[in-house]
Image (cartoon, rainbow, N blue to C red; front, top):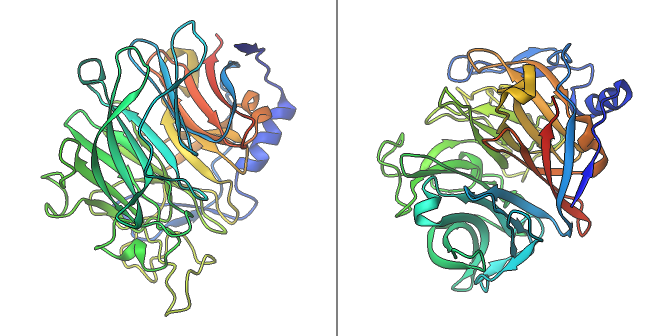
Amino acid sequence: MTRRPAALTAVALAAGLAAAACSSAACSFSEAGADSSPATTTAPPIADTAPPPVSVEVVADGLDHPWDVAKAPDGTILFTERAGSFTAVRPGAEPTPMSADLSDLVASSETGLMALALSPGFEQDRTAYTCQGIESGGGRSVGVVAWTVAPDWSGLTRERTVIDGFPVSTGRHGGCRILPADDGTLLIGTGDAAQPSVPQDRNSLGGKVLRVDAATGAPAADNPDPASPMFTLGHRNVQGLAEQPGTGRVYSVEQGSSRDDEVNLLTPGGNYGWSPDRSGSGYDESVPMTDPDRVPGALGAVWSSGPSTVATASGTFLTGSGWGAWDGALAVGVQKGQQVLLLRLSDDGTTVTEQTTLPELSEFGRIRTVSAQPDGTLLVTTDNGETDSVLLVAPQT
């Protein structure tokens, strides 16, 4: 394992923000659930207070698109690679491949073995969840699978498909994210499979955030429609889900088309306005991500990249005094912008008041997943292809 020295320079900070911040044109903001149209304002100011310098330890390298990563209570780090593999890194040990039945995996374009999450009761039930492409009965879809992890971390036993039927075509916009809750439910963000009617189609599971019973896959009993797994709709490609500690607020991180990467505050039953279907003309990616003209009542974003995209790919809330003034900030993994973006939210959670980056991460290229840990560290996966890494990032005080 390699530990890299911390460094924080004005040049690196400026370079990172140049890619993350909006250009001189405006970003979009709105109070979720209140104003149906996104307000137009300038980009959040660059923070006066820099985050602390961080150390970066390479946990595993030479990887091919490691999509997600989790840390178990015993300190073992578990990660997926999109083409189809699980790897465990036990404390003080080298990365070790794990056995798993992935015989029906569909790995094509952006789809494969993707999101990974551990059950809140993992110490007792050893349950892990993945979101992955699935081939069944001659058809393809994306779905969530439940696994039992062996006590010695040698492999995973496939237990059941929790829910599937998320649309997939070429594999584009097939990515998804899983957020388990203590009440026994799963929130699942899905992509629209680049199909124009899907985001606004209440009968499709694509372009949604779903909420289901983790044990059965049935719609959660207190969903907006108790007969439907749909929690929110009108999304393009949900890449991140994060719950803000102490508030219960849940935010989605979403990739835009030719503009408007977004962070959205989720409101049960909310419609976030992605409507690329233009009178039979196909998948129009030039339209705004939040379009109240076509989708009355569409909820505006908490943060938007504005007229250009940086490819936001994940989100997590930093925790711990080691982060100083940035304790509680939303950290966002950025692919095209090649950085970790930090967003400080307003007290009511509806706007971003400041933003900055972690410049030490800029040398690692595209960032897929950021995952905050209870000890204040941050697990990170890169997304460059064949030369990727899993990183452990720690603030230095």
